Length: 386
Image (cartoon, rainbow, N blue to C red; front, side, top):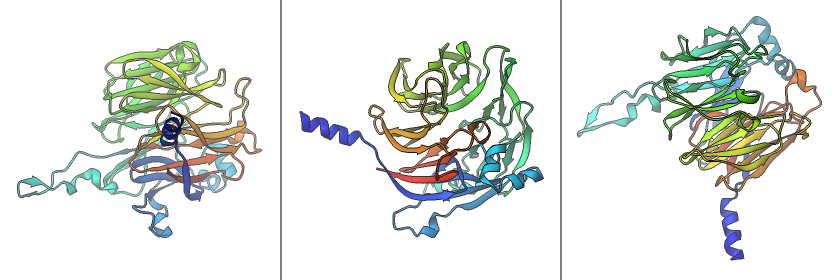
């Protein structure tokens, strides 16, 4: 019995092997085996190596597109501290592929290699930069502004659904609790319309909108106090909206990871202890792991799920460390990496954090960018999951 238990524990454990680190790049989103990141106002891409024998030169980041910001941001983006102070660079990214283009018919079968989604250069890229939503059309190398934000500086995430519709929710201070909008584009980010409005007093702001391929739905996460904290399940066109969780700090989340059997949520509260929650497809909610602090980033790689925590000290969450925790089986959770917050004031130079990318990761790699931590400020690390 003991040996069986040990074997089960070993099989369910996960570990990370560092394979590369890059300074000055922030990860944004996976697109299959391509990882996109921001280097100031240049969007760069990294192709996951097909085997361990690939040369180091094949693991370098390559230019994908660029955005031309206000002149002064080209200056502040050159320094890590000034970039942190004014929140420079790309903050969210969605990769949108077009419809499948049929290929030639050979011996009665369509040649699948001509599908657009197999050509990464044909993707439309939609990103958030300070004060604007920007779009790079397929085949071009520059972003252009498609929406100027009227409230707040940026949404936390941008989400696309298989139909091609793209969504983002307003994220701004909203102390007066004004109405909050979700915006949508059905033409690859060229034009934006209000797709849904939360009435005044209903929420403070939108934390995230997550597409769930197994539920064929969207999960909308909102905050910040009391009944403003909501986990909503909606149709992909936002025509039907159902409140699944609400009313307390354990319904306050930014990171949500759908899987075939459940949705995993990490809470984001300075007022209570934080946890990983499992929301089953039948609606059952379980607390399955403890978190040392608030979490606003999560991702999935293969069967493994990862969440990061940030250094946001409060009366309840006293840690000054940033952590990444993960699980291979969603039952046994481990702390896999840890950093200490640096000495720069968090009010101005950001909380210590580890950014994890959005998108669909088709590799066995974990990528993360640490910010405001000792020794590895604005460093992207890529680990092989073992």
